[in-house]
Amino acid sequence: MTVTWIDISVPIYRGMVHWPDNPAVRIENIQDLSRGDAATVSKLELGAHTGTHMDAPKHFLADGAGLDDMPLDASIGPARVISIAHPQVILPAELEAHRLQAGERVLFHTRNSERCWKNDQFVEDFVYISAAAAQFLVQRQVRTVGIDYLSVGGYVHDAVETHRILLGAGIWLIEGLNLSAVKPGAYELVCLPLRVAGADGAPARAILRPRGQ
Ligand SMILES: [Zn+2]
Image (cartoon, rainbow, N blue to C red; front, top):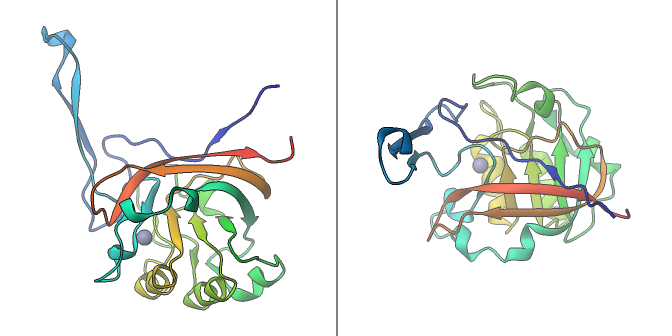
């Protein structure tokens, strides 16, 4: 039986989109076979919240845990991909129909996936999780939340509030997903952020495989 894993992380490359006040990605070969060196070795320069990544509580909470304190099963296990119809924001009213359960890992597929990764320009009006929807997710006691652009909160609205509400409730956050190849439904998620000591965030590889196949 062939197991089909879907890569829902975005490639990391020089010049890729990044949050406006975060560092740009630079990748350079500091040793190169083509220059006569014994090996090719590249140097990566990037922010902790580059591309597909996870946020730790300490990203927004002074006494919060680092990403290396995250239990591995927060981002490995059954997950649900939910399609969001609203073109601007995720609201509690749209989430209510989905009967979210305590402990669920939930990934929101918004129009961001199809729209925002097409080029290297930062998109300000990406679909985000409203503070009210963040409160709703806390009430439902979900475990992990994923979104398909660079922040769970908006660029103008609810940037800090949504992060504080979710991280403050111990919900783990995956940001910068590309769910364009993924339909709504039940999946197995594997998402592993780099083990950077005390990290406020770290790039991650994230993959999904349909369940029940
Ligand atoms: Zn974030």
